Amino acid sequence: MAAPDRIVILTGAGLSAESGLGTFRDKGGIWAQHRIEDVATPEAFARDPARVHDFYSQRRRQAAAATPNPAHLALARLQRAHPGSVAIVTQNVDGLHEAAGSAALHMHGRLADALCPRCGHRWPAPPEMTPQTPCPACTAAPVRPDVVWFGEIPHHMEEIAALLDACTLFAAIGTSGQVYPAAGFVSAAQDSGAHTVELNLTDSEISAAFAEHRRGPASRSVPDWVE
Ligand code: BJW
Image 1 (cartoon, rainbow, N blue to C red):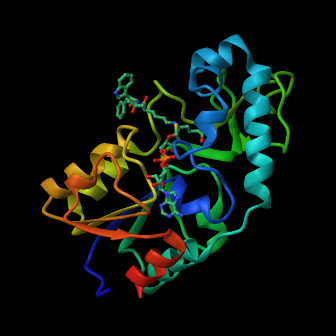
Image 2 (image 1 turned 60 degrees about the vertical axis):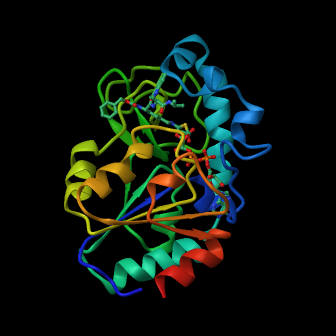
């Protein structure tokens, strides 16, 4: 790929699928095993924090055992080759971009971090959290995983809006385009005059919005696209 000036790459669960982490909406995915209303809303956490912590402690263990696949590594090479020109915005809460050597904006937070809803303190989450785990700053409990649930505002939105405003190439990798605001980024990029590319196994909800499509598993399509 000839590198244009300002690239924004949005990544989703499909990028980490070949690292062994389940996607959400594919057959047998996370939302086929757990109801969103039970584990991924502020109301679910208020009702049953132990259940929500069990769900995220299990996901934290899985993510800690996973390693980056060739797609994460290719994105890290691209970012290294063009310092300051490649922004990765991820919806993924695993740490596989960082493990591959990339810097990424985590719009849906990170499993590896804990957040105190009382005082706003953030710190590295212990492998297992329970409703009794106290905040190290203010001692309040329960504390929560630092992830963005439905109905909450994703992180870094101003920075992402500015990146989309200025970008010349926008790519979305391994995301179903069913969750907003990320699903609207392609339209924002198009409005800025950017070329838009979707890399996915199949068509997504928003495929029609992209100018170019590359089909196949990310471990192959991403290195092909990047080199
Ligand atoms: C491969 C592959 C391989 C597989 N190679 N590809 C109507 C009613 C109520 C609410 C709303 C509404 N309309 C919009 C909303 C808002 C709501 C929303 O979008 N709801 C929709 C369901 C309708 N959104 C929100 O509430 C968000 N907040 C918000 O909007 O705040 C308002 C605001 C925004 C901005 C400014 C100001 C105000 C928050 C959304 C939070 C989402 N949270 C989760 C959980 C995070 C923590 C956790 O991980 O548990 O985020 S839900 C889940 O979905 C997770 C993901 O990041 C997100 C997206 O999923 P993703 O990554 O796309 O995965 P899949 O599984 O869906 O798709 C996988 C794709 O990969 C597929 O396409 C496969 O084909 C592909 N694939 N293997 C390549 N090997």
